[in-house]
Length: 439
Image (cartoon, rainbow, N blue to C red; front, side, top):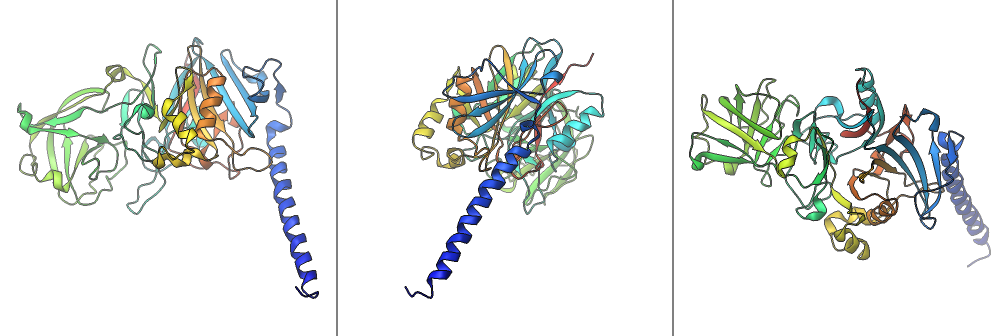
C-alpha cells in the first residue's frame, strides 16, 4: 500500500466510526423520546416475573387505571421492552371485545383510528392490540384480507382453512390459535373448523361443502362464501359465482337458512348484495354444479362450527401459532426454538427477533401484549420461543401469536404506549381489546 493511499483509508475509517456512533445515538434518543421514559411510569417494588428474566417492571399511567385493569412495561433481560395490558377476568366493569378495521374485510386502518370510532359510539376502550395476519395488497385489489378467524358480536365474519404457511394456522396443535369468549365469559382457545355446506333437496349427492368465509377462492379453498362484510365485490378471477338471496343475515357459528339463487356469473368478481351472499366455486370444482345451481334454484345453507362451544362465541379472533399451553411452552415451539426455525421452515420468521404482538390468559387475567423491536439501543424484539418462555414465567397459562413487525401496536388509556418499529402506526386488520362494559 502506498503512503499516498493511507490518508484516504484513515478518513474512510473515521467516517465508518462516525456512522456507527450516529446509529447508536439515534437509537438511544428514540428510546428517550418515548413519552413513557419521561414520567408516567413508576417502578414496581414486587415484579411478577423472576428476577433473572426481568430487569425491572414499570407501572404506566397508574392514576388512570379503573378497577381490574393494569398497564405495565417489562424490561426483558434479553434486550426488549414488553408492554402488557391486563384485565381481571372477574372484573364486573370490564370485558373482552374485538373490532374489524373499517368494519369490513377489505382495507385497513390504524389501531388508534379503529378504537376512536368506538369512542364516537360511546364505547370506552381501555386497551387494544393489533390482531390477525392478512394481505396488505395484491394484484387483485385485495388489501386487508384477514388470514385468521374473526367473530364480532356473534357474526362469523372470517374463517379460513388450516394452512402450513406464515400467517395461517397450521393443521396441528400448534395451530390452535383462535381465541373466543362465550356469553357467560368462558375463554376458549382452539383450532376452529367451519363445517358448512349448501344442500339442494334432500340428497347428499347435492351437498356442496364450503371451505371458507370471506377468504381467497382457489385450489386450496375451492368453495368460498362471500358476505357483505367482505366489501362491494368478491375480487375473484375465473370462478363460477352464484348470488344467494332470501336468506337471513348475519351468518353465525350455528346457522341454517333457506336461499334462492338469483344470479349466475361465470367470470368471477361479482357484486355482493347487502341482502345476500355470493357463493364462489373454483372452476374445476364448479363443473359438477353448473347444472344444479341455476337462476331460481332453491336450497339450504348450513353452518356449524366445531368445537361445538364455538357455536355460541360472541367475540373471537385468530392468530397463527400457539406460544403457551397449560403454563408451559408449546411443544412444537420448543423444537422450533431448539432448531432455530429449521423444524418448521414455513414459519421461520418466528426464529428471528422482531417486534411481536400476542394475547394470553390464565384463570385470573387476560393479557394484551406488544413487544418493541428493530430499535438499536432500546429494544430489539423477541423470537417466538423467547415469547413463550417469557410469558410462561409471567404466569400466563395460554398464549397465541398475533401479527407483528411494524404492525405491533398497543394502544391504552387514550394513546399508543409502545414504540412501533417505524415510528408511526401501520394500518392493521383488526383489534383485540379490553373495554368498559356499557352501563
